[in-house]
Image (cartoon, rainbow, N blue to C red; front, side, top):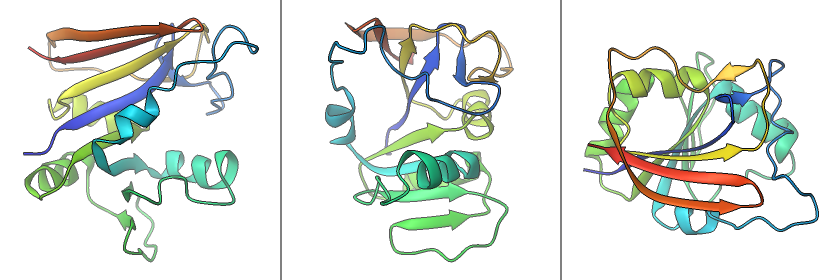
Length: 176
């Protein structure tokens, strides 16, 4: 079975976007200091990325409007919209839990859960995430889109790796 990883950044107070849905605060504490690139190493073990419509739309229209930055991966966009898919960009009306259970049974490398909260929270609740790779950004937003939604009880994790760069703390956990 393929490994499912939530690779995401959040504010120190647990938000993945501000109250307007913006992510322009996703940077380190010093603009003049280079931040260690953990994405390049992470993406080597991934061939599939899953995200919701809002995340897709933000990437496609704001963050990288000129090219789809995940073109080397098979991208699944969970949406209620009926849009034409391509070989590597698939718009699906499937719920996140059903989609992940199906993808885990298919051959391939790792599956990256990119966002947003409406995709992540049901997967956490259903215990379908194998690894949590979370970068804590040195910013307190006070309000916004929370990463953590309600769970059906305690979720025990084991810390497997930490790394700090430019005030950003990367924490990697697996299920115990």
